[in-house]
Length: 264
Image 1 (cartoon, rainbow, N blue to C red):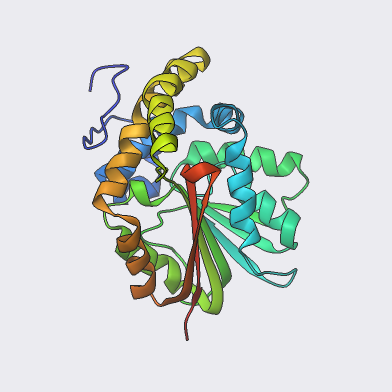
Image 2: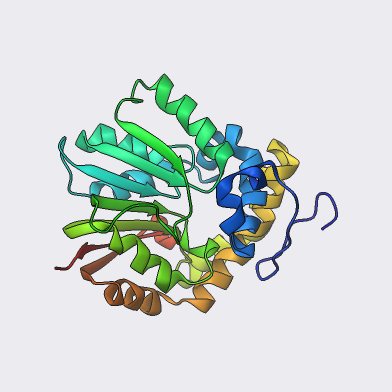
């Protein structure tokens, strides 16, 4: 891939990256690597521009995600695709629980550790490098689990949901946040105009990297929901042994949170 060009939604291109030196890099799929190449260089600015480019909705969605979790001070929650630790910090703030965060990007984890230390929560949150598809934990080792913007970047969403459910104890909650496409026709037109036109332009005001993210997100989101419509996604959850699966769309359908309880 020539410098500065972003892979389109269905295209996977590999480039050398600093994170490729980590032990996790040897197990990354091409889809994993594409996500790593896109977002890892933006770790230091990720939180700021995710908030600005979503007009503050990103934080609201994460808070709702965390509100679906049932946990207390004696519980341990796994946050998958934890990025810079935003959900991990919100879990501690809301529930007082201990959190383990896991992400494939060492750059995101480094930014997250700094953020967590600044918040005085280093004693309650541990961040580790790893892949959602192969979690390095025994069965039923967590009381609950969250994940954020993950399933577009794995080859087999159904198998990944099964792997997430595996490490949660029976009765524990699994909750995930993804971008969504509004079902209302007018909202969908507005969403498409924003993601195709305004988002790349606004991202470009921040940096070339954020311009690339702006170009990528809309087509990527549409491609994912074409491959895995919502009803199919919910079937993945149920086949993973998750019960009472529920859905809430947010911000006129721009985001969706799915949650369910691990069966016996």
